[in-house]
Image 1 (tube, rainbow over the protein chains, first blue to last red):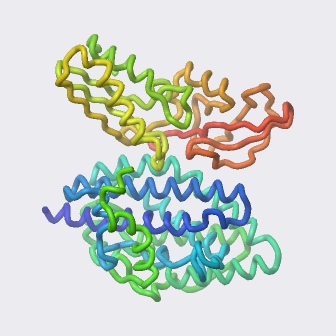
Image 2 (image 1 turned 90 degrees about the horizontal axis):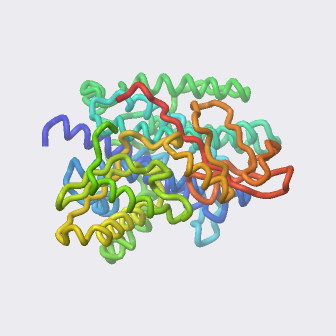
Image 3 (image 1 turned 45 degrees about the horizontal axis):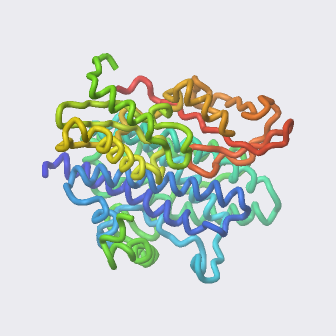
Length: 263
Length: 174
C-alpha cells in the first residue's frame, strides 16, 4: 500500500466510524423519542447516517480489498477512529432496560456534530481522492435535511422554559469539553491536508467555531474557551468502555454467525 | 447519453421498466431515474444504478430483482449471460431525474412529486395530490421512507406524502 493510500485509509476510517457509531447512538432512541413524529424523523435520520457510514466502508472495501462486513464488524475497539464524544451513551440505562436518556445532550451532540459534518463534506468536495468527492456530494443532499432538523430542536429548546434552557446549557458545556476530539484529524492530520485529501484541521475548526458563534448569537449564549478533548483522542485509537459495549451489541450477529448477516 | 443502443440494450431497458422500488411498487426504477447506464453485449449485461437515498434498505432487493428479471427474460438469447449491477454515486441521483410518467404515477398514488427544478434552500411548494389545494401542512419532513415526507391537506382533510426534493448541490464538480 502506497503512502497516499495509507493516509486515505486513515481518513476513511474517521469518516466511516464517526457516522457508524453516531447512527447507532441515534438508533437507540427508537421508541423513546419525545413524541411519535420525532421517533419517525430520528429513525429516518439514523438510517441515512448508517447509509453514510456504509458508503465510506465500501470505499474502504475497495481500497483494502477486505469485505465490508469485516471492516465494520470485526475490528478491535482500538482500531476505530471515531471521536470519543460520538461513542458516549445517550444516558444511564440502555434501551432495553430503564433508559434514562438525555434529550438535551442528544440534540446538542447531534447538531454540533452535524454542523462539523457539513463543513467536512464541503471540504471533501475538493478532495484529491476522487471517490471521496462523489461520496461527499451524495451525502450532502441528505445532510441538508438533518441539519435543518437539529437546528429546529436547538432553537426551540434554547428559547423554551427555564428548565429546558438550563438543561441545554449543561449539555452544551458537556459537549464542549470533548468536541475537540471531533475537530481533530489525529496524528496523520498534517499529511491528510498536505496530500489535499481534506482541508487543514485548523481551517475546519475555525469554520466550525464561526458557525457555532453565529448559532449562539441567535440564542443569546456565549462560551469563552476552546473546545476540549478531556477523554482522549479517538482518531488515534483511544476509546472508552462505551465503544466496547456498543461494538459488542452491533457485532453480536456477525460474530456469532457470519452467514446470518446477508439476510 | 449519446451512444446508440443495440437491440439487446433496448430489451434490457424494457425489462428494467418492470423493476420497481419495493416501497413504491407502482413506479419503475427507470421512471424514478435510477438507471444511469446499460451496456449489453452478446454474453454480458452491465447496469449502472443510482441509489436515491444512501441508507435505502431497498437497494439490495432492487439489485436482485434486476438480475433475476434480466436473466429470465434474456435466457433465450444466451444461457451463459453474465449480469453485473453496480450502484454508483456519480452522478448523484437527483429528483429532476424522475420522468413525467413517474411524476404522474407518484401523484396518482398519493405522493406529491418533487418540483421538477429545485435549488437547495429554495421554498418547496407542495400541492395536495388529491384535490390540488395549496392549503397544506407539513406534519413531518421525515416520512415512512427516507425519500418521503408526511403532510396533511386542510382542504380535503386527507393525509398525504410528498417526495423530498434532492438537488445536486455542486453542479460545477465533474
